[in-house]
Image 1 (cartoon, rainbow, N blue to C red):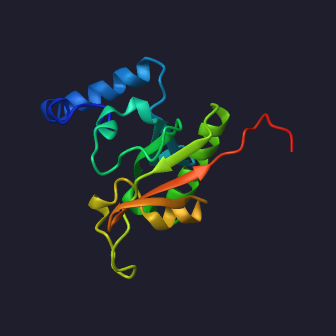
Image 2 (image 1 turned 90 degrees about the vertical axis):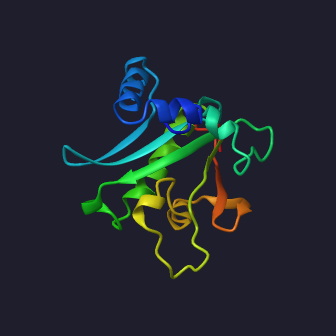
Length: 164
């Protein structure tokens, strides 16, 4: 809910209030993202929606729109601790791209973390928007770098209905 609300709304609803807001979003029929499963156990999450559904992202000075093209945004990636570093983030990113393509989107972008020193590890708690390395493995390319550690990564999607 971090990107879907103003900072004041997010802080006021912290914890249970934001969980209730997410449940209301799901109940409304608007899918807020994708889940990854291992068997019947959920192990990962990827928040993906049209950028316009993320008002806080729209107000971000750092993550301004690159152009006027309509894009879908990946705003959050989470993988359960026991399942990290096994490629689940990459698979979630690929699944998000397929989901966006099936829903008529042509551009999907994300705002991952990229450490200044590629050998340095980012603490998991700070990697909630994903890591640039996972986006690269999923086929995204860097389109802008508004700060030393925050690239804007994009993947251009082909139309599933176009003839090749």
